[in-house]
Image 1 (cartoon, rainbow, N blue to C red):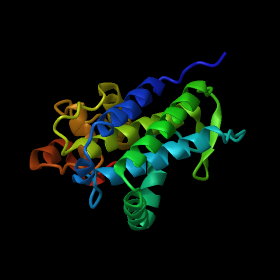
Image 2 (image 1 turned 90 degrees about the vertical axis):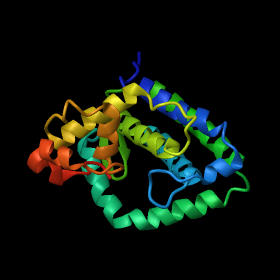
Image 3 (image 1 turned 180 degrees about the horizontal axis):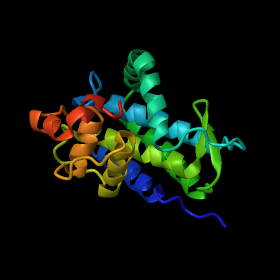
Image 4 (image 1 turned 180 degrees about the vertical axis):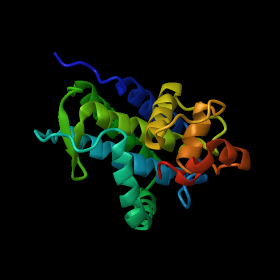
Length: 225
């Protein structure tokens, strides 16, 4: 009998929080800025849609290979790829999101695809291995990466939407643990989980007091791009 990966519940909360927010927005709200440079709300939602589509493909691509990345080392690979292809991807997202006749069409596609991705996540064996982006990792680790992605992009999406609910606290804890594993040291205990997510992903700059507290480790930020 298959069991649910520990972070599937956090992924459900993260994806459904996004759905709940965008389902209530006016067309004008989709043009609001986000924490992601040059992307508005509709752009971030389309980026999340691409991630949900990749999730479906990944769960349908089991692998018998030994995993070569996990929920932490995955982000080291992503940082390298993003630095090379980030501008091209950003342009593709902007053009694609703008091609919808109305935001309602994008919201519907996101809703259908994200729910299908969640069903696939719940049905997958956490100990199984899947292939994505030329690498193999366990289902549990893959779900962990999705939680980090969904949580950070929820913060992007809602930065200028004051009525939106705070990010799921479990998702923020997953992000913090991932950041600490990348840093190979605990983040300052004075930092909230929200600050860990914002600073660790480069959405918020380190202040002088933060740099003093971090010491030499400050030069490694952002930990996730």
